[in-house]
Amino acid sequence: MTRFLTRLFYVSLVLVWASGPLLAAPFSSAPGSIVSLTEPGTLADWAAGALELFGLVAFGIVIRKDVAAIAKKFVSRASVAGPDYTAGIENSGSEWETQTKASEGNFEAGVQQAIADKRFGKGVSAAGQAKFVLRAKTLGSQRYGPGIQASEADFAKGVGPSIEALRSLDLPPRRPKGDPGNMARAQAVAARLRGVKLGK
Image 1: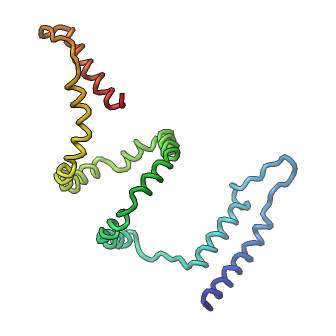
Image 2 (image 1 turned 90 degrees about the vertical axis):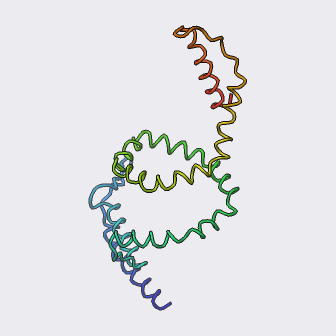
């Protein structure tokens, strides 16, 4: 408790020290004028500096480890957290569905913003072909087989409607090889499968 009060005292001292420049920062209060908070030496700069000092003093945040050490620690801790992951999702299905449906508007807004910012292409460029090949050769090759084996029921569920639609499709009669009329058969198949995909 004493340590907390001491830290609180220093925080207060920092804020008092910062309040002088804050109050002295030039700004215009004339009617119709616009106060700019983005130029050097204005209120925003002093506020940002005060908040930064407040955070450092109040919480004592000092990062001593380098990025490699932090990444290594993350992997060592997270790689053994499988049971925690399983326990966390055990009974969260209904909550996931409800919350995910409720976020549809945010998803749409985020996608539109990503399109406007050209984030897709930027993300591909940032990853690069080397990362794509490396992950596909290592992780991808290991997970491909187990993923296929686990997908039997989902595969049947996904392809079933298309197969049933094709079985009941009444195609135009087959014409001689090379006859343009045979394209009508291909078009009928394409149109039916597209309808199945769109739920029609």
